[in-house]
Image (cartoon, rainbow, N blue to C red; front, side, top):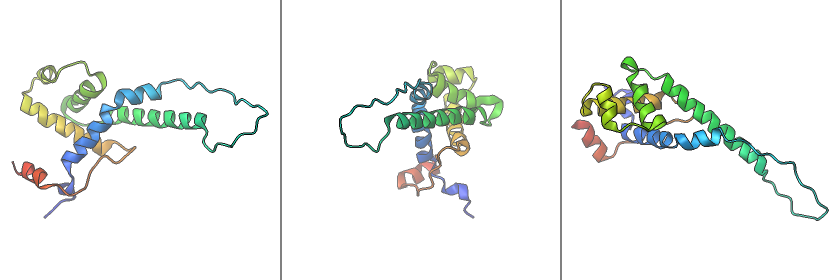
Length: 151
């Protein structure tokens, strides 16, 4: 019997999460940037009307970045995992970025293999809980991905 979760392409899902979380600092800068809105300038010269509104586009980008930034933080805070290990791993890797991997798994008192398994689980749990965009990838697995599942 095949379960729905058997169809999840974990490798691509993890890539999606990595791509999002690698941009955490950028989202933070955009979300917390101040908007320098200026009053429109008028003159008597005829001009072609622009449909775009640069000020409005800045506001929308900033609000989208803030929404995504807040959703990342909330999703990380709500992660399950024994003793907050999922949260700890993702925060150290993507938010604080201050510790080498070796130090992270030593602080957790686990071996490198156990750390790799926990990190993978944390990334998949994050993908399941992130609600702004669907990070879960349900595309068919390639032959290489199927072989790695069997190992």
